[in-house]
Amino acid sequence: MKLTKKTYLRVFLGVVLLLAVVRWIFPSIAESRVVEVVTESVNDILTPNCHVSNVTRKHRILSVPNYQEAFPDTNTVQLSAATKWGVSPVKNREDAEARKRELVYIGSNPFYHVDPLYSSIPYLVPRAAILLQDIGQAFYDSLYIKGVPLHKLIVTSVLRSQEDVVKLRRRNGNATENSCHLYGTTFDICYNRYKTIEDPDGPHRHAVRNDTLKWVLSEVLRDMRQQNRCYIKYEVKQGCFHMTVR
Image (tube, rainbow, N blue to C red; front, top):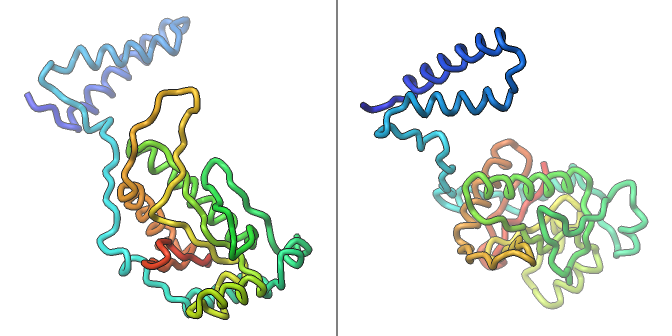
């Protein structure tokens, strides 16, 4: 006999109602025992050929159909949001540290890792810092429910001071002078590297392909963008998702 979801729910609810009556008559029955009886009773009712694997099935990894189409927001679009929500450009690190009311320091935590920064400094406006934290936590949660070993995101670029932009343009003539990174609203998350979360005293974990982690990350970012929380550009040469808070 094929057990449908509807039939399973009817059987389960029937057993729950029966046990509720028993518990009302015999209130001394422990709650934990009731749960055990429910499970045992349902299992007894189900025939050996019935399967309920759909109840515990892991969520599928779907990714997005096309990265460029899913994350098309140009620098012009992001710059508009950056000037709206950001600070006036900072001169250097000392200037950023003096503007504690406008900027917050961000550092590595359980949900993301900040790379050594050579062309930016680890500060964001509070609105962007919350977005980054939410992305990191959503990625972590998504890996968990999909049954993928846990990893942390890697942040590669944050707030750029005017001093940083000058140095960057000396090395890279294509670097934008009026960068969204100047306003503390923008950060980059790389999609080809991730920080493995591993118990130093536990067994060695099997490796996870970067493509798998990228697919999961793209789902998280697509959801954030669809919720109007940010603009995102898929950067091919830089190997990152470049995003600005909205």
